[in-house]
Amino acid sequence: MTTADDVLTKAEALRNSLPSSFRDEMVQSLYTEAERIAHRAVKTSSNRIYDLDQRIDRLVTAPVTGLLVMLLLLTVVIWMTVSGANVFSDMLFTVLFGFGDWARARFVEWGVPWWITGFIWDGVYRSLAWVVAVMFPPMAIFFPAFTLLEDLGYLPRVAFNLDWLFKKAGAHGKQSLTMMMGFGCNAAGVIATRVIDSPRERLIAILTNNFVPCNGRFPTLIMLATVFVAAGFGGAMASFIAAGAVVTVVLIGVAFTFAMSWILSKTVLRGEASAFTLELPPYRRPNVLRILYTSLIDRTIFVLWRAMLTAAPAGAAIWLLANIPFSNASLAIAIAQWLDGFGRLLGLDGAILLAYIIAIPANEIVVPTMMMIYTNAGMMVEAPADESAIRALLVDQQGWTLLTAINLMLFSLLHNPCATTIITIFKETGSYKWAAMSVIITLGTAFLVTFLTASVVRLAGLI
Image (cartoon, rainbow, N blue to C red; front, top):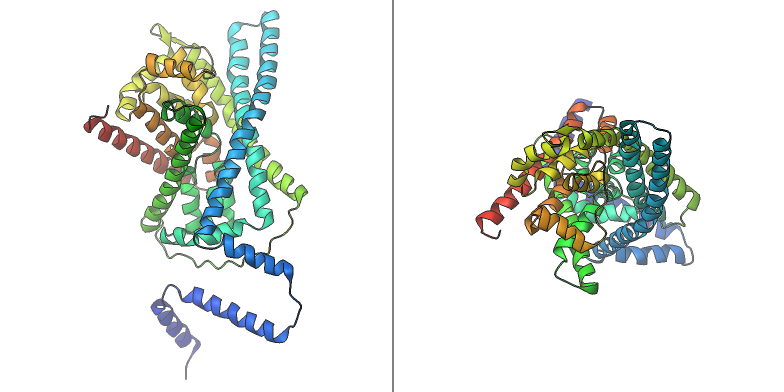
């Protein structure tokens, strides 16, 4: 007599002998049979909406056209985010920094000691204003656009298109959705990993999300691409070359996402990949109120608040480093000089490393902190608006080369998560170990890649 244990033992033995495609073939056969029965049992006139959905899906889920449509939409969303954010960022800069200047002047009139005035308005407030002015506009554009595609029913098609790539990397197809969310903010991308059911694959998505450049890193990438990569071109060609350089960096980040996902799936997060069966929802009319609430309240405001909480102490630290004297210079200059040897080894310099250390709370303040160190200013300052002035400062005065610019782009892409993302990783995993691992993986990768790039260039005699 066959017992239940015998049946389970036999089923387990058969399961291990089945090909990896068995589950997909089984699900496909079930849906094919269900469709056959439905056609025999139900007689209806042609459903134009359903037919339209199928015609669209033949385009957006095909192996070639599906990827092209996805890249085109992502490019449009990023272009809208970058170009539109510049306008709103300028407006916020004018308002927030104008208020800061007015408040600072009142403190001076009232005879408040200079160090209190500087600490509050040139340090804490200036850092907060910078983060809000740079971070809020792109998130307020990217997240609604992303949520619109989600509400429309397109994003499940993205997961469908990229599932085979993530499966080869030992990850889950839904990681593509969290990766795309990371373009707006890596902290939001980490939160978005909740859609992945498998704890192992969700952890892979969390640990690799930072390889996608968030909106806080785009100002640095765009400045470097414009001033260095596209410097030898003019007019529309310069913009095209600069955009191509930024897109190349983005694709490098995607490649590192796949590579690190594969490494993690074969080492510390080894395990069997979970099956991914996705029933594509019908296209539907977006709900504007839900889009605005989800994108602005749940995502933008939530992430911005966490960033502000970490930016305030960063502003205080930046001001103190710039205004505490040390050996005939500021403490910031002294630390940058101490880090310079290690920075040169990576094709960078000490000021760049110090800027990234100080700017752990928010990537948005990397460039103004770097400019503060280079100009020996007492507070964060904007980069010169004129490209020739930036080149004069960085190349003529600080000795930057094309290698410095390229390695800074790579370091900006691969370096450790910001404090907001690290806190979010801890809250999502409930583990200090995985939060620390996210820093070790990304920062270790950034150091290794920049060191190898600088070494190869120098050995080849290119610089």
